[in-house]
View 1 (cartoon, helix red, strand yellow):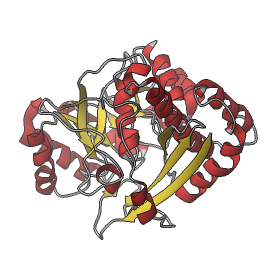
View 2: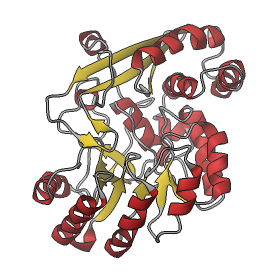
View 3: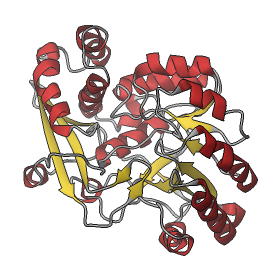
View 4: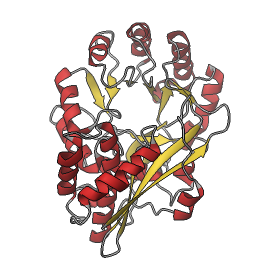
Length: 375
């Protein structure tokens, strides 16, 4: 077995999306390639963690050395080896969770290819329509009329839900939500993501409007570790709080479960410990009737894998469809990861594995660009 990591980037034109964490200037990703002795190739994605070259280096050095020579089918054993050898003691914490996620995803790709099955079958699921919302890095801080103009083609394409970026300021956020609700009516589910841009006072101000507009959830108003702010904000209204893309492994979700205030879980297959760990997180949430709406990362590999997982769990919710105007990691990195249907749903790929073939020429043509992705 061999393991390689490819940090890749592409710049965004000036005036790209602005979110609660800043102005987007580029997009980064880390692709992980695992090759077995029999020549089966699996691909996974490690989230870049705003340090894509560092995450790739961790994959190719410490983690590669830990698991090289192990059985590629032993996903639980590989996960445990990395957890014991790196994550649980004297390790790099979140960085290791990101790095191991890509290895784990690639191993599941290999297992399904070896079985000749699409991944959802190996996970115990069946092909079924998965509702999708129009989200990703877009639908941000434009004036209301421009926001509606951006949303209209997605609604025409079939989407029945969309996610607005909030966290700008309560006044403008409320005006945008009201305009979108008035224009599209009650047939569209409106979700929101603050990208940690809110204070406690901001949430106190926006929550009554969210309740009145029947907003589906308020995602990440605060950083993942700010448990006290989440506890306070949960009492400000009925709109569910959502989080999870920046919670790592089931052990951090155990704290979320104990707190009892985050009612929508959004673990990311490229961040939270891979497919192996997200199956565990979803099962833990299922026992308490908590829905699981995975956060999608940068590339079509993560996105396709997320659809497979949603087909295989009993508390799955929305697929987060990245509807960015120009996402090369979705459109050019490899084969088509998913297609939105007229019913607002996506279906899993039917070819063996995750079902996204990677163009390695694309990897070579998009070397990493150092520096922050948001400024």
